[in-house]
Length: 561
Image 1 (cartoon, rainbow, N blue to C red):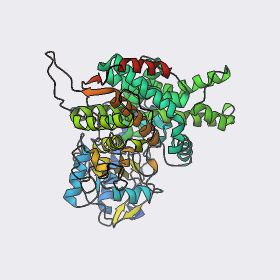
Image 2 (cartoon, rainbow, N blue to C red):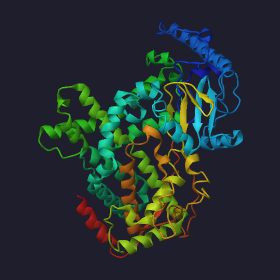
Image 3 (cartoon, rainbow, N blue to C red):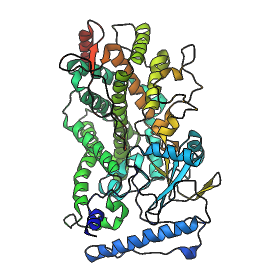
């Protein structure tokens, strides 16, 4: 009993071994259940001390009640197929902590359905394993399937409520989405070409100076380019305090998501515990994390404000928003909206970092793909020159390589979960309000009917026999999410990936590492398998492809400044 008590009360208990964090502040039975079956439990009197004991008892009653109601309602409501749930805990032990997207694919095959259902502690989940189901629900019924679940640890205690990706569906979210879309829609991204090209040339210069630090260089340049676009900040070297603080903030979210459930997310009344109280360690941790998150949002914006005051502000996304909404200086709410929009623009840059790291890994695993892309670059751009094209169609094989990169190794195999805002029926299946709906990007992008031999890395699948881009093959947009919640910065990310990749391929051969005796070390890729699926740290060599590359890169580096 003591062991169980310790497990239940520890500061950061992992209660649900799913990728997605779930908070069960209420257990809502479907509308098909008769009102007489519902029991209301009040926790309004819960505060500190002995009140917390009452909260545990009431919470247990809520969960038990929710499971009982769910079991009764299953007789009248037909949920999508899925594994049989255990009493009380549901399918808590059926979903693995790692590679859960593969388990969901296996369930689809077992139950013969592209949409599957399971429960955890009374909370309903559906996983959408095909592009058609994702389109039917996330696109055609986006009014129902665009909400986000709000968690105590992420949104309330650490400050991530400001980021658009985690906001609840409503007017505030729509306003942020509209402003981000204005600055990151496909035509608008062309205005950032000079910044993106500058970042790509800084990357190849850093790779020449210290190729062994390529992982750090990729992270630095991606973040610096985004800061340049959003806040007009020039950060030419690593070690800048602003960049390091922002990286810490992004890491906070990854840690919260990888924990997959702090106890306070399951028992929200615990947020009222003092930090010094036994079991309140999560609040001390949250306070430390919140400092990094707040810095990411506020410090760059404050720097722009100071530059405006002294007349040194440069054009950027932040100054554009300030000019469009001049009342920001008088209205704190307007200022906060601008802070949130600009901060959200930066917060999503990590996926671009991870995609570039995957690119390096792919070049080691498939050297023939690298050679074909380089041959195309040499023919179109010319060997010994830096690329200056921004048109992907001018380099169809390289563009197909990037599409295949997104398809073959999606960074977020399970898209960030949506939540239903009301009851719905789909193909005879009942999906209740408050249900967590997850698009399985991995399943969509590895569907062998759409992409034959999906485990192979084949850029040619996106090309016609004549070598041009094949418009009949679906683009791998599932890598960016679904419906109204699709990543608003995807066009900027694609433009940055294109420039970074063509510059690296034009200047370097990405080669396998050598051991102490000069022998080639064959790569043995290992991947993380939780929130982000990315290669674990590995080694690679970046060898200049031609004489004079050093001088060319030095010139490019000087031009970048």
